[in-house]
Image (cartoon, rainbow, N blue to C red; front, side, top):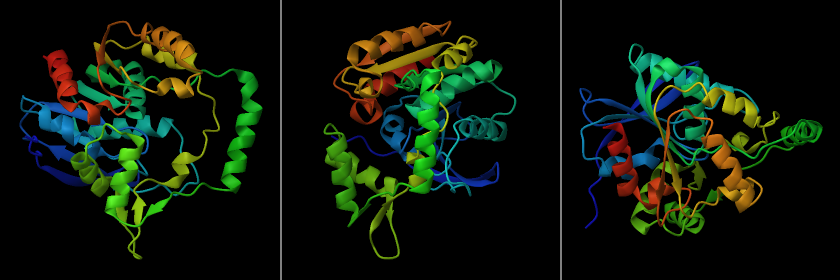
Amino acid sequence: MPIPLKPSRSEFLQLRGLRTHVRHWGDVRAPLLFMLHGWMDVSASFQFVVDCLRRDWQVIAPDWRGFGLTERPAADCYWFPDYLADLEALLDHYAADIPVNLIGHSMGGNIATLYAGIRPQRVAKLVNLEGFGLATTVPSQAPERYAQWLDELRNPPLMRSYPDRDAVAARLRKTNPRLTQERADFLAGHWAAPDESGAWEILGDPAHKITSAQLYRSDEVCACWARITAPVLWVEAEETDVWRWMGGREAARTEIDRRMQCIPDVQPARVGDAGHMLHHDQPAEVARLIEAFLS
């Protein structure tokens, strides 16, 4: 029998000059729990995990800039440090005086884990869901990376449109075969919306697809992670495919283990029968791990 969807409400804040959409679940008097979505995703992506939480929580989940219902900045590309500043502005608004519990998936996990090392006093506990970071780079890659960035600015990427909501749901299921039809139908209504012509457009700025001009510096990331004082739950999916963009399975395993060991107080966990979108594949197990860790 399907688990009933817990109702959410939307709030719009002005954060750092952008109209920002924030999704809320639960009683405003309950303990705070911040959930941060990944790249090309939206806050509603956490619905299934929220449905499986047994305790009362006030869950707060923003749409990152240029995703979902949050405004797109007047810029032709995105810079990763802006996400850190956006998170700080969000916490200033909702929890200025208390350390918070952060849960982040993929890009959201990277943002949360970096932030926990940059502002260690502001994070009580952290759950990183598949937020491993990008492939390690070397300085010699910089010239080609800058050239690639300039080329993509000249020829900006586009986002594919879909004829209807069913086609969006089919696209989601193609990417993640474990996604049930019911969950795909729900996500499709938040992941995309019809435009004036009736075509369904993805609620993500195509500029997110432009390659970062700056290399991913894993040693700098580890230097931040080493300053984390909060306990960290590091959750991996057994069928993850992140190795595809980290140099292959063996190289990815070695590098992920190295990065995890940079965190002073880390507890690893694995979720079976799940891919990178583990919060869609096994939301009950993810919710169980979260609540066991937080308690």
